[in-house]
Length: 81
Image 1 (cartoon, helix red, strand yellow):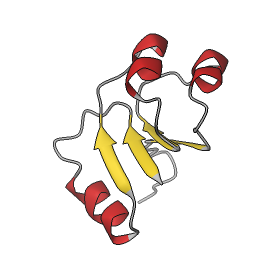
Image 2: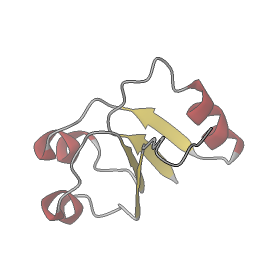
Image 3: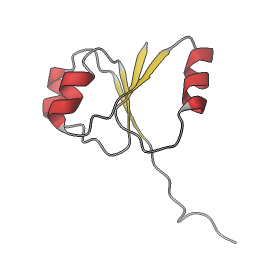
């Protein structure tokens, strides 16, 4: 399976690269945020990992291999002292 990180402002994706390599999966980092950028740059992905990109119906209709969308998200609300 091919994984594309559509966009990411992390300093490094070394952890993601290792996890996916260990699973035998290919991963690429793009900086595609708009619908058109995602469609243009991410056509061959089966999995998107997104931070800010909006994955709309238009994007899904134009990325026929896409099976899963995962969003980077951190919520500290559930952490208590």
